[in-house]
Amino acid sequence: MSNSDQIQRILFDELDIRGVVSGLEQTCSDCFANHDYPPAIQQVLGEMLAAVCLLSSNLKFEGRLILQAQGQGDVRLLMAECTHNHDLRAIARFDGDIKDDANFIDLLPQGQVVITVEPEKGQRYQGVVPLVGDNLAACLENYFVSSEQLPTQVHLASDGEKAAGMLLQVLPAEGTGEEDWERISHLASTLKSEELLTLDNETLLYRLFHEEQCRLYEADDVRFKCTCSRERSAASLKMMDKQELVGVIEERGQIDVNCQFCNAHYQFDLADIEALFVEGGAASGSDQIH
Image (cartoon, rainbow, N blue to C red; front, side, top):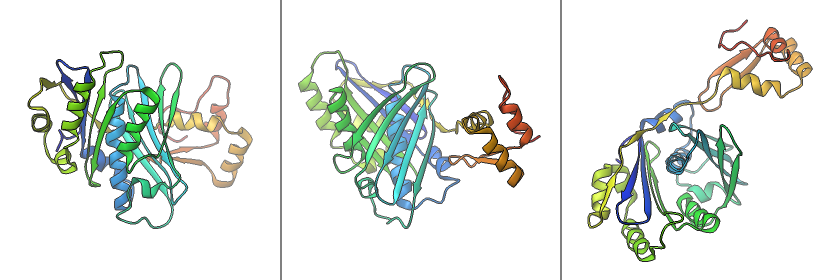
């Protein structure tokens, strides 16, 4: 497949076009390991993981990029996110039975996709992507053309166990290069999902662009890694009313916070809550229970 669990930039030496290709295998397996997702959900989440990995290649700061899809049907939420370190995670929330052959559009009637760029320092940015076209790739292409005026081609493939993607885009603030873009996008349009999932990046690049002067940058590894922590869980509790939290502890003996991405489990007792609401204080920084 496209180099497994890596993201790699494509450089066209004489063209104002950027490219990037991603391949995910162990990453998909780790993302899905703690969830009993139907085949259609795994297939679509795989595409979203490949897509968010591609989109994150534009991050010029420390932070994360989040891709969310919401609809009015049985699937309430599909979400994938990637950090500047290429740490990925994903989740789906749905009700009822999901047909095995349901595609992205089928799963999200009257839906939309939201792209959120969240720097660790600085202002959060969010863009809304209408579900235009037959799949997620078409939605993203439409977003770049309509919102950023950047001709873009996106290819995504997933079989529920592994996923891969390729993005090609005209560079902003460079020459127009319309003929170049027409040629490159036409060559890339011949790419089949099977090729994207099975060919390594060098072979893929040669098959598509052997008449062009292009090469691959050194690859970066990608991986599943959840960003949850006891500190983040405590911070979410601090946004709630203290007496309400105390009431829960008096009834249940403790407060349980479970991460829906990785199934990590954090427990807080009365001493934790008291420490949390002391000015300048916080619950114990370790995962130990008082």
